[in-house]
Amino acid sequence: MRTRASATHHPHDDAPDTGEAFRRLAALPAGAERDVLRAEIVESWLPMAERLAGRFRSRGESYEDLRQVASLGLVKAVDRYDPELGNAFESYAVPTITGEIKRHFRDHMWTLHVPRRVQELRNRVRFAGQDLSQTIPGRRPTVAEIAEHASMSEDDVRTGLEALESFTALSLDAELPGGDDGYSLGDALGSPDPALDTVIDREAVKPRLQALPERERTILYMRFFGDMTQSSIADELGISQMHVSRLISRCCTRLRDQIMRDAA
Image 1 (tube, rainbow, N blue to C red):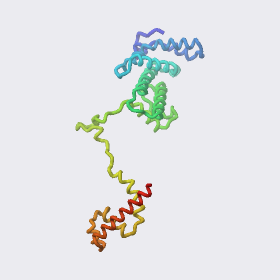
Image 2: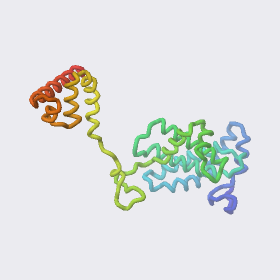
Image 3: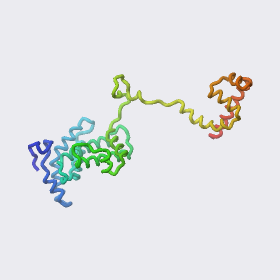
Image 4: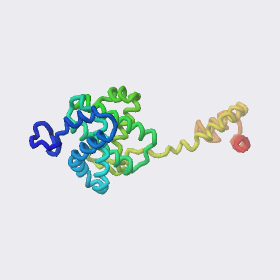
């Protein structure tokens, strides 16, 4: 398992020549001989895994932990790699190791809690993407391809993809793209509608209003919906303003008492 000096066959300088070893590994049955060969392959690729881990040093995690995560990703890549597909191992190992490191950050350093279901969708999408990278190298698999490979709906795939890209939270003070006026995300948020506070009251009083005598219901409508004064209502109905006042007061008291009894 010597390292090739030429970069013609491998895009990475520290990529060892393990093509024959992988073919032997695929042909061996489970047992001690296979375990030894597997360990030798993993050891040969450790320098590249550690180099990939070094790319994430400045993200708040210790390098030793990153090395362990990268090693785990390497082991997974070795176990899942199929030499019969004809692709170089590093074309599969690099995204697998990098994905394992990113998953470590997402699982252990989320700024917001992610529902368990979304985490599971994210993992299924990630694994499907890694598997498909062996058969369609050179491009990212489409939503439809991932859905078919993982037996998922396209909506669930999109949810998983969004979770893959949602590791950090965006500050409400962040300036919105496409503008230079200092307009932030927080400025785009709505505020509670004061009218919502009256929705329950309106729904509660509606059947009681319908049960009132027609003249009293008309007076209340003119006063509170037509915004008419008591004097205007009195003139409209041909009664005194004092009588209008007494009727409004009596109706409101009756409605309030009935609704309070209903609530009790």
